[in-house]
Image (tube, rainbow, N blue to C red; front, side, top):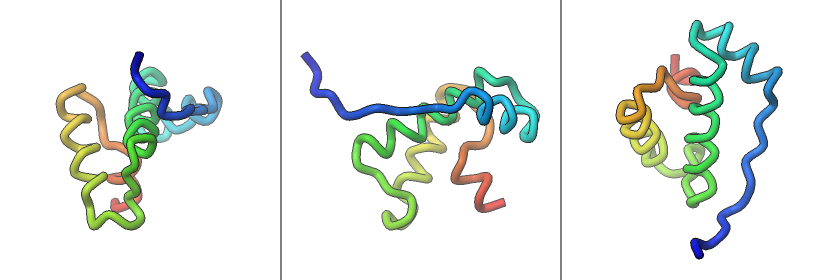
Length: 76
């Protein structure tokens, strides 16, 4: 059995609002939020890792065909 990393909580109303704001589907927004959350659960922290999490998030977003993630939105 794989070790339990933790939990990810996503507000569906907030995800819907963000999806509308950024022009993509609610499903895509939830996937973006899940990816961001998983990276945090494995120990990454975009506030202090010199871009490591941003690079990992970008690689995974491209592989999964997702629009800009949370880190790119803040940079824009």
